[in-house]
Amino acid sequence: MYEDLIKESQEEDLEILEVPLTGNLKGLYCSGTIAVSTNIETAAEKSCILSEEMGHHYKTHGNILNMEDIRNVKQEKIARNWAYEKLVPLHKLIEAFDGHYDPAEYLCITNEFLSAAINHYKEKYGTYYAVDDYIIYFEPHLAILRMF
Image 1 (spheres, rainbow, N blue to C red):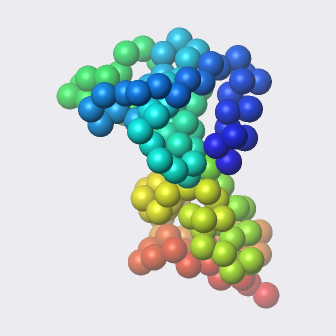
Image 2: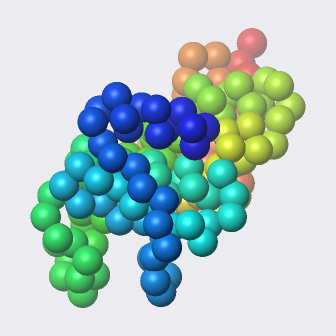
């Protein structure tokens, strides 16, 4: 997945750099360039970080580093929501369910990112959402039922 995101980014004329970042920073976006920390050990986590930074490219603008400003917090949420829907589309959750796969492994994302994506969908749709012949329950935990 990480390599696919890099390829997609390059097709959009985004420059992807893997560089050492200090503190808790794992990724940054600025003017068509995305920096991903070299301190990230797994491709799954790199995918999560890169997709969020891509969300900043597509959905936010300006310097939003100051998280004490509510406008910046909102822009951060917009970028994250874009990343959740990019890496955890509902049809892929259904594919994982149908194939009896662990969703995080199937999607090549971290368990934390999957949990946050499920929370995003719960905020967006409520307790459950119907997709084609399936009902996806977001609470009390992820469950997918096929309707016959």
